[in-house]
Length: 442
Image 1: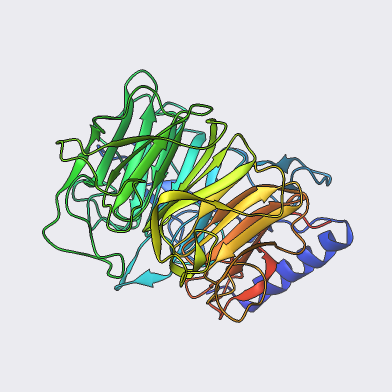
Image 2: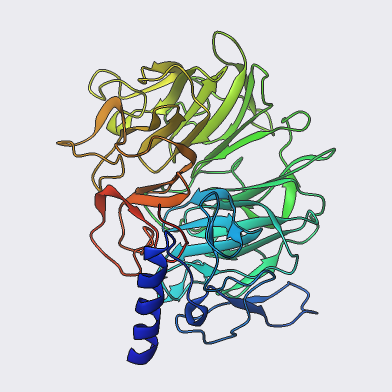
């Protein structure tokens, strides 16, 4: 627990730097972590404890009392946020080349993402930089600058590693040269240029899990990355749901999907009976896929950076039409969003958002205000989230959403695991809330 004297120092530092235009990390509360055993075969790394237990050495490039986020300036160096991801119970950024995460309080008696506190904390990895990061339902993976992948969190389906303990990161075996990493409900994948798409955890070609339950026994799993047979070449876009996955090559017309098709999320009425079970289907009018995302039971894609189309379950209006009119569909349904350009797409459990010049545009389920505006229930009419103009990064979690808006990371929606970064557990909120401890405020 932080002593009252320390709190006073922190408040004084925050107040001083607010006046100077920056909210910063005080030295005594910098996100931090340390390597437990540099020679550990599974690259075990401790995640910092709530009050600094387990190490007080920040990663390379200390976050000090004169440091703030780019592009805003203060007297010291600024830290650039280059990636943002949100999962079922936590959120993460890559800041100054390092993974920083918050949320995910203890689930089932153990920390699902290795995080004790709810505020932002560094997650140390052996390599000095993180090239790609993705948070699944209850786990997170990072591809580092050397092409190795490190994961931590819930390992019920071996989506992290073989038999690794929670609360530490684990190097994924037999995997080198990864350029990007992707987390799903119970599985993980990495793109290895020249090799293809490799996945581990729940084998999505097998029986599908119950999306309403955290674990379904008897399903096929592997902790050794395996190629997804039937996905041709080096894909750029990967989207993982709970029981299905999809991939595509940027700018090409084909979507590859595999796994459960209970609601038409593979884009066909009946999936093939081949061993691979991979569906290849053309998409869009222009035939140039520029973004791809998946929810537990649906899939969406963006055609040529303009039009949005979704298929699968229409729970809460994810397909952009009333659920009563279309409960589900294997045909791509165009979503009428109020924008002429889409640069990013992501999906939560029952909602979806895109990034447009106007800001973040969302639709679908809104039980926890994850759409960023009040509704009487779900809405299948996309609307722009107020105050998100100037957004450069956007990510949807299970029941929350985060965005990088004019140098600030903000989140809204559910906060029962601290995923909004308020530093406490709360009932959440509809208004975008700035993540505390991540730096600057204009």
